[in-house]
Length: 349
Length: 199
Image 1 (cartoon, each protein chain N blue to C red):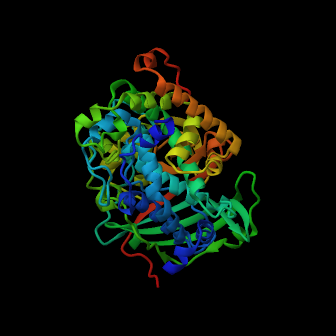
Image 2 (cartoon, chains in turn blue, green):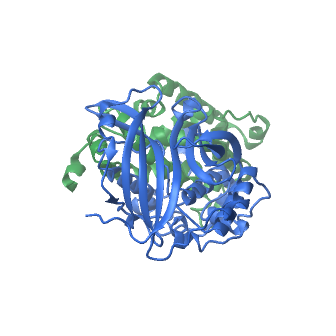
Image 3 (cartoon, each protein chain N blue to C red):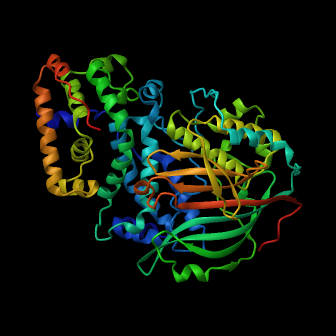
């Protein structure tokens, strides 16, 4: 038998697959396709380099290697639909902390607390900057879109029932690319619009107030919540860290949960203080970050240096070749300016 | 968005359309995801496959503007992206091959084989083959497996790996020679002439 025949037989027992075996992957793709299609104001826009909030339903246990393979032995091979199965891995919060996040936890109760009630709306005023990659007439273009927005989100339930009013601000150049004239024409206010769309997030990724206020106020349990459905290793840490960001951006929770969240976040392996950072509204704070392995970027969350209040988030390039822009380039940036409570959202058509 | 439009269209036209209608990209997924997932499973096992496959199509979607529309068939492009992403797992891949070589049990096949006695009875030739695959430089293993398991032609493998066809040919020839040598060797010799892994 020659070596190619031997090779063709090697692991040939891996079964042939059909569409039913790739449903989880399909869901992840479709949610991005729908997100991209839903932005009518820029029909040629590409998906951002990295969606600011990625809803990853389940992550492979690649880093766990052989241990994971052993756990999977005899189990069903491919997940076909439904929510992620509970992970057999127990996530014990390590004894680790980041001073900025400890201080943020200590100070969580010092701001005036909001007490939104069911039926009301939380109103978030924010600024953000996101890369837009597109093409007009076969001409590739890239720039940084800046917006100022006011978002009304229901106290209970999905953000798809919320309303947003967006003002497009003057765009900024993406390093090395001219600003396309099209981008400047979009500057201005838009009428309030229903956020709409489909929210097919798993239950544990909800970030409405009603859900967040029911989360444990114990840091170790909050840590487990951040790792729901995840394996171990650097990829899992990145997703857990992004879950933190998802609970901070356009989200509000009681001080007790917020304190637990900051302590749990500080225990995620690899999280470090990276120094000063300026948020999308020009406010300087101190940033804590986690670098995504092999992608050349890091996710930063910025806190006020005096009050340790959460200010905003950035994605910054740490490796030019992998990140696709010079080191230090700020790819996305946001600022949370104000959170308040309203009885109703503006009427929309 | 009529179905008939999608059935006949080649990959390049579907990708071109997805630049205006992002949701059209779902058709590219339907055409290739099951095959690519099986390929990734065969190299890395079921655990890593879901993430690699999901990331492959997300990356492809983000890069669809850079797709060369003169290439009607997107298969090499997608296998190339998957190969890049699998590069993050090269350590796991090599470790699993080495477990098979040394212990005779294949971690990758653990979830597919129900009877443990089947797993235990790997033939000496399979163990030798696993050892040889583990010792190949990653780029040589990629070229060899794209052709042997991914059913890509040499030209397509060259497109996938972004190298010249001549490079693919020489990588595969060298890889095959090493495999042949290893398969001819006795198991005891295998353990003695272990070389460092090139990662």
